[in-house]
Image 1 (cartoon, one colour):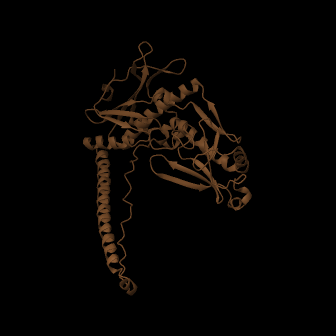
Image 2 (cartoon, rainbow, N blue to C red):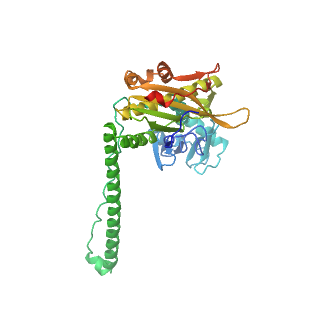
Length: 397
């Protein structure tokens, strides 16, 4: 059914503070999000999974940290505390080795650090809800026609510094330290030369790649087909989708049109609950109805097609038409086999796209836009996609 092309670009969702793993929370907050309480204050700790990056922010008033009665201690306990959030939105208050504390300590922490704990819960709720917001706002990063994508920034790593040379003094010579100092200096110089060579090679490779990308975009804008393909590969593979998405494409024979075949996210990818920190010491979850989730999925699919269409028109000024057809995988209830079903197919011209107000993207409904341009899409009474026949490549002629 439909068309397939040999070139496939797998687009993995961008790095975000995801709701997964262990740590502060498993399914309700980013790994590494926690607060620690010690004599010198209360701090919010946030880590970005897989990057080694982290930040630490003080969230209490300095005056309270200096007060021995406001350190969060109970009885003879004087160690640091760590507060995390469970799957169910409940607080987990432990020592720094994740050992449980006594009920007396926990009660006192909740009482004396209520404001700090509320900050943690609000940030955890924000990260949870951002997943849904990213799905519903996938089209908000669509570039305006004629805008060029960013190329990598200039190489910014500082050059290694020449090690300082220290001549042996009288005391060094008397204590027979001159030989060791000379050996240490030689070792430092060799390490410097090695670091400098590595730095120069890294810098040259970065700047070469940066120049090639800039050249690719420039030639693609002038209509060189090979560079158009290379530039489109680069841009599509760099999109930080909220959910995993795959794009296959092919140019028309006269290279004035592009057909996009989009493997849309799965129906189960849309978040089914939102969180709220109500000030009661825990997160409150609200499950979205099946009808809401189905509508969210429809919005995610339309927004994803809207986004890729916009990327093509922004990057390649020689393209006059874009045919975007999206399909999903759905299990056949009769045999349990996963099948591919096209659910949206839309042909958009450049003149139609140029008529959109890209200063008001938040006011644009991608579904309404594509439907206004004659998209093929069908929903049943429960707002669930039903299969459609995608448009043929001949519409690009």
